[in-house]
Image (cartoon, rainbow, N blue to C red; front, top):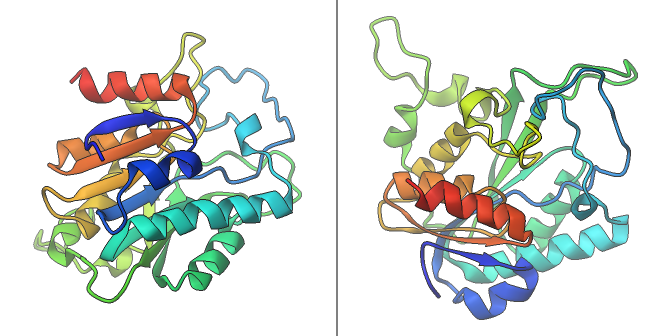
Length: 260
């Protein structure tokens, strides 16, 4: 098992041979949400950012296939985790049911469901539903002796007391306000659109990695995308392993992490 390496391929096929059992301290997974299949074109949209709907082949499953897919990769993550290791899974209402059910069946303990409030979420174009302005991160732990660096995460709370001290986290964690990635942080292709439609904010990964790992720990991301997990883990002195199915995304991630 090589650390600080990007593997190109399907995580379900690669993890049994690449990732040793009981070896990983934390996993962050941003799997397909299974919400694609319907195209949405917005007039005059050129950013490829917040208002560019996910519509990719890798994000289309039948209900049965998606449940099986979720059970397969989460089972492999469970095997890879150390006792006390943490599994964070990014999701929306489209796939949180499969994730919660599978986690329970594997014997993982659900510690929190973090709500990410997207301050620049896509507007309510159809006006037929409530505005979709949140995503979730389910935090599971394997066993009882999990890492939670309360003081380190408390320092990341942007809200302070009246005298400038770090506040308790009840007004921040469990409900994190962050914009969808934009500006210089958004990685774009030659067409000036987002290189990856679901790039996660660096700040979100900083919070998660600070909470559940210590320096030198191993962080795995089985859906590596453009490499935000590895980028942040490296900057925080953690080891990391990335697995990405799409060679184009893997190449972007490699350039992003190793060109520093």
